[in-house]
Structures are given as structure tokens and as C-alpha cells.
Length: 520
Image (tube, rainbow, N blue to C red; front, side, top):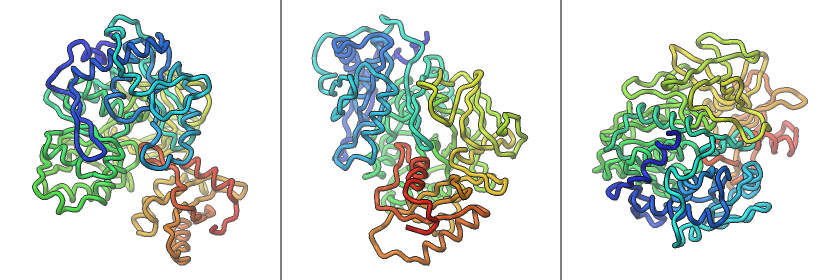
């Protein structure tokens, strides 16, 4: 029964329900589960012809669309292991370092085959395009015909605090996390979902694609680039198409607040939104308030915003606020809810000793949804030890609820006190001095702890006094660390697919550029 939950829909696919995919032009096209199942069986035949066998890894470098769904489930049907990767962007310049990161991920995953378009062959790795995957031909194995390995999926971390790492997710862990998410969000046979999240990322894949597919729910799925261009279309999924469940990083809420004017919401009824999970990155309390204020006149109930904590190594969800429990705040941090059933969370100090409520330390997770381990033992950050996940994240517990401060790797100790980059960014933004998209990074060099505000040049005349003011406030928040304001060319700050800055990459770039404390 390991694979029964995930593959059951393929055995009796419904013709009346399925996935609606967005188009670049602003429209939608529908593929029923019956059509998607036929695609998956046909694609399984192509994988067999390409030499894919049980236990092989198949890398999927495909955007949100029917080909990704077919490729993912076809890989499972032949007993292989899918490893979704960020596809090469289309219609715009390739992000800095994308091809290098893709090559590194392929080296880590060691796939038998890469399925994707416009993907350069890795060392000895053949590729199959989406068109070739779905070409006519004999079907592959049916559900249950091929025994599966212990690993159901390889998913990669976001890489915000170092190189992305592959995590092996087992069938039991995946099934357990899908089940607790379904119960947490109150999913039933009539539920309708909407998502714009990338399908190669854990929140988009497990939470907002596999979740609705396993439940055989209708799903309105936008590509991330379509959401960026037309965020109002995402809200229309709830007001006009009956969607009630979604998930988003804080970036998505911020984008909607900035890009959607209240007048554009005239005539929309958002009272049907029952669950809007907010995770992937720390959220400022003011952002949740602004988002609620924007949509409340159209019937949106702010209690539908459900802050949560999760990570790729735990399949996805670890803690979450339940509908009706209300949001809590401790200082600058919003609570991420209590552990989901079967999962436990504890906080420890640097020596592994338990810490009392309210004391910041490393977040340790135990439960049935933990991954089976990383691909290789390299890299810093989270690690699996004695049945527990040492997350590398910092937080504290209060009355059973988890409050996340940030990544331990994105913090420094200054005069015995740990300072977090997210805290500094939030305080500078609340003071109105940090431009949107600017990032704070922390580290230690030969002189001691350093705080760097990295600001992209807007091509206009810069005000030296404004930069000096940023430096003064940064110094105030770091209590003695050396502070630097560094201006870089537009587009220099790297971001993950879930909207997180790649702080470690920025810190290394800062150190390589110059240790000079003056602004350059």
C-alpha cells in the first residue's frame, strides 16, 4: 500500500475533474484526470523505450503543465524516481548561475534521463523533450505492475543558505504528509485548489499539485511567471471559479498587495477562501495585516491565512495554524502553529541540550514525514541524526506553538547575542529606509561580525545621505558589528524559486569583492 494513495487516481481517473493550466496570453485550458492518466501511461512507454528502469532517477526540468504531470507519474509507473528541477526560463534572460546550478543538481542526482526542453545534456545524460515524451506509442506499465524502491521522490532544497541539496523522500513519508495536510486543511471531494507555485519546489509539488491530484480535486494552476504578470487572475480563481485552498510564500502576498488596486477587486467575492497557507519564508505581521485589509472588503476572512513551517527534508509541512485558532505574535515574529499530528518539535542549544519556552535555539523535528536522507553527506545546514531532523533553522516554542527566527547560517553572534538577517531587514523596511528587493547578509571576517546591506542600483542618482542612514540603522540593530552598504548592478541579487535571497552566495560575493568597510 506504499504507492496506493499516490497512484490510485490512475486506475480509475475521472473525466469530470482535472487541472486547468494557465496560458501566457491569459487564458486557461483544461486536462481531465482521464486525459492526464492517458498521458502518464503513454509517457511511461517512452521512458521504457529510453532505457529507464526500476530504481533509476529521472530528472524533470519541465514547467507547470500537462507534460510535467505526465512525466512525474510516468516515472513512478516504471518504478523509477522523479527528481524535479527548475526549468530554464523562457521569454526572458536566464537567471544568473541557472545553468551552473542545474549542472550541479544533475551531478548530485545522477539521473538516467533528463526530461525537458532547452536543456543542455549533462555529462553522459541523454534528454527527452516534452513532445517526445508524449509521442504516440505503446503504453508503459500500469499501476502496481512494477515494484517501487523505497524512495518515491528526490526533491531539492531551495538553496537559500548554500548549494541546493537533494533529499530522498520515501513513499511512507510522502503519504503521511499528504494525509496530515488533507486533514489540516479540511480537504474533501468537492474541494477546489488554486496555485501559482513552481512544481519543482516542495510547496508547489507536494502541497499544491500532489495534494489535489491524490484527492482528485479540481486545480487551477498558473505558471509562476503568469502570476507575476497577472496576479489578479489568481484571485479570480477564488471569486469566479470556486477555489478555496491555496498556499504561498510571503512574496506572493506582498506581490498581490503591491500590484492589485482595490478598484480592481470590484465585483469579486472572496468569502469562499477557506485556507491560504503562508510558508517558505518568514512573514512580517504587517504584511498579513495589509493583505487582509486589501481583501476584507470583498469578503475575505483573515482567519483563512494559515502561517506554517516546513522544509524539503520533512517532505513539506511540519507545523501549521489551524483555521479558527488565530494568529499569534511574539515580538517581530508570527507564530507558525503547532506540530501536525504525529510530528514533534523541540528546541536545543548549540550543545544539543533542550531549551525552555521562549529561548531561541535550533529547531529539531521528529515524525513520519521525514525524508530518508540527503544525496551524499556534503554540505552544511540540515542533517538527519538518530531519527531526527536537525533543521539548521532557529526558533523558539511558546505554549506549544513554533516561532521561526531564521536560518542559523544567516545569523551572527555579536557580543554574545545572536542577530538574524531577517530581523534586520524587517526593521529597516518598517523604518522605510531599505528599498524593495534589497537584502541584508551577515557573516564573520578577520575583523569580526559584519552586516552588509546589499542594494541594487536603480540607475538613478544615489543619495549618499540615504545610504549613510541605512548604515546607521543597520549598526543600531547589530550592536557593534561592522556595517557595510554595498550597491550592486540591477539583477545581481540571486533569488530562489520560492522567493528567498541566496544569502550565502551574496556573502561569498561580498567577501570576494572587498573587505573594505566603505561603500563601493
